[in-house]
Length: 167
Image (cartoon, rainbow, N blue to C red; front, side, top):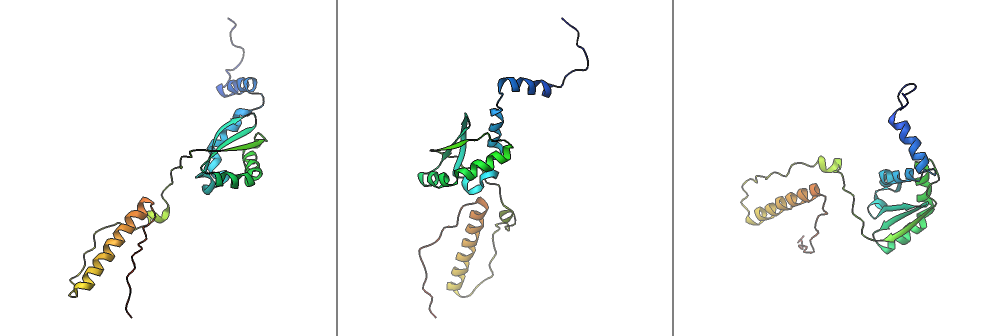
């Protein structure tokens, strides 16, 4: 075995050389799309469409519904251009949309839900009017439900029951 001549090589340099031999067209670089897809297409699209595979310059994207697939067909060139700009190379030649299950990405809690007051029981003062006391209890219960739902990120339920106000 021949003794090493010169300083040792960095592993990154060796891997780069090997990857250039294995992947001369740098197709593997296209797989970084998964790391920035949500930012490149926006939250609305990212919740309904996710990349699933990349082959020979074609990015396969799974879409939640047929209507979203049609909408994204109209945006295909713009999305492709955004992705290639982020990749700093024209690796994505085409995008092929397929309807399937799209797992919704986890939503980070927003500053709005962080700023919500804690849902603590509210002590009502003694109210002589029984009707008014009952109404106030319903308001307090509704507020507690609303704050709990807002913290969990679920939309508030709307009641179809409306009370008629006399006036």
